[in-house]
Length: 306
Image 1 (cartoon, helix red, strand yellow):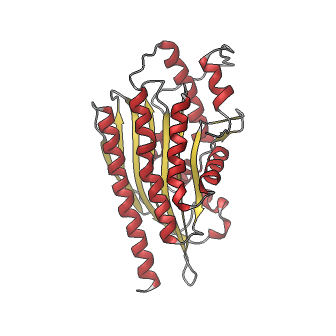
Image 2 (tube, helix red, strand yellow; image 1 turned 180 degrees about the vertical axis):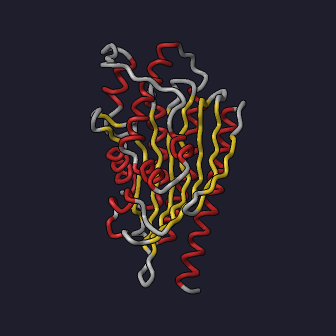
Image 3 (cartoon, one colour; image 1 turned 45 degrees about the vertical axis):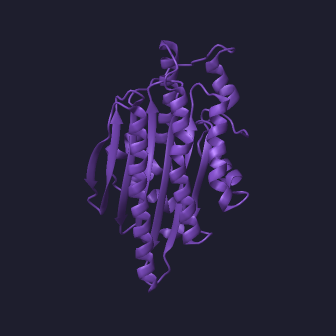
């Protein structure tokens, strides 16, 4: 088999996995919701490629859940990618991935995000440059320690077969990446984040990416099942909407995936699917120091060990 044939085989294997992953996660979320189904939009990108976007709205459990697959390609890397990896300027590229964001109805159920992706940049006469990236993170509004421990224990179990230090490294990377400097707080309680992953070789990097993608359901669904029937009132709902504003701030100001998608000519509706359907901002909001709302920022929105 030639090098070119192997590259094409690898790309097809990744794409097949990503499409199956989208199916698996959508099925798990729809089953947990029990009252709503995903709507699907197939879309094409004028410059090359396309995707399928799936969104569940106004469900019994999920106010909005979006799970997107995209596979785009072009003759030149977007500016956000070359700013991150300047040596890639002038190369054609392919990028494929699954990205999801879930906004539940109940404020006691955390918002969550996950993403796995594969990039390859090629230039005639030179070896291709490829890497995997991804991870998952949890954004609770009223955290429970048991949920946080389950989330991170699942992440540890995913990482364990790939090296003793993988969890600690990718947890620290997640804490650093999902940080809002202008608020001096993390977006949530973290999880896993990795990028530029190629140093293990294709097979091991792909296996790890598969483990992270497949592990999301095991990490998230038990938390949803445990919390979605807890009673709540207007106070909790208003706080949820206020904290969703932080989610919007991060995604629009700092998130590299959002910027890459917009700069590469991706489908805007699919890229901004990560935005919550409702959010609010309140000038100089200060919770009661002894309240559960104050505990969120004080006790959870900074890196800690679970």
